[in-house]
Length: 226
Ligand code: DC
Image: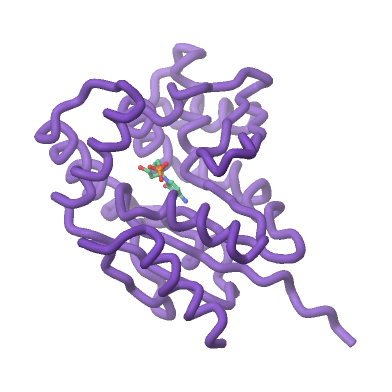
């Protein structure tokens, strides 16, 4: 009898939609692995910046993506995954807006996306995978059993990011964040390869005014309802 594939739950959506927190809650509740694909793009942006590579040089950035070794380490306290780039812990640097902007820029390069394809699919291991990103349901795991697209108003997403960054002691204004989020959304949605959009078979959940736990509960109901 053919073995049934390892189940995948894809959670796509723009930055600040609550994906990171919701995915951690889901992975814990289901006892599944977690793929934070945004951290991979951030790691490449980080590695390229550290190497002094011009981020608009598609060839050089692609070579950097092919050569960069990325590992995740679970801090074990329910916190954000630590990202180890070429053996070095990228620390909080990887979560900054600067690194997010670099990630968004290099994510538009087709060679970078190809370089990360097998690495991402390799996270699909029993008993299951929660995949967090922009193209998890459309490109990476098109056969996923459950696909969700999380969204929220830009103002709400900027407020959430502001709270997160302030808690980390990072100093950014709400207005600057809103501007950055809108610019990043536009870039992610308009790029030629794997643009940010909901898969036709994804369930769209607007999390504006909703807690992360409430959003996770909605998704769990979808997973268990199948
Ligand atoms: O989710 P995040 O903010 O960590 O993602 C950082 C950037 O990486 C985001 O602006 C777009 C890009 N990205 C992508 O293109 N595809 C993914 N699957 C995940 C992230």
